[in-house]
Length: 137
Image (tube, rainbow, N blue to C red; front, side, top):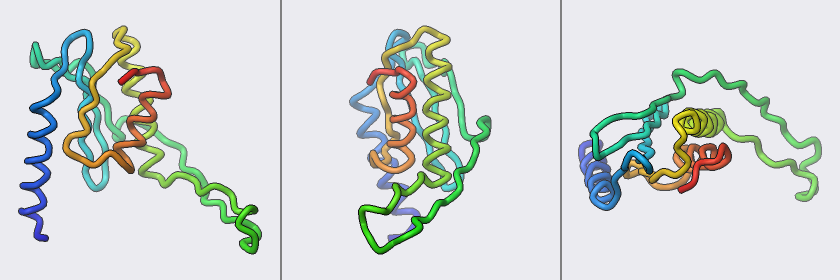
């Protein structure tokens, strides 16, 4: 599939999602955008067409985990859990950061807009980070 066709499909998916959800001042929309290198999150009030809070991985410093390999790969029970990749870890931290900023504005409930992306990988990690900090959606 060429790049133009993929882009058209993504835009079509995003319009489908946006047709069903919208944010209010009491329950804003958490909009996610991811590029190949970065991930961005915004809380948007669609009634007033205003961005309340935004953050991205460009603003966050994350300590990278060392990739620990299991000492003995003979037994499956001995294997340790695989550490998160750096992009997933960064997305998780962005989710936590956007939740902290939302708490400062006394926002606890949001509507999650995955932006037409499938709910896995970095988008899921961002959502789990926001949930861990106390946002409800």
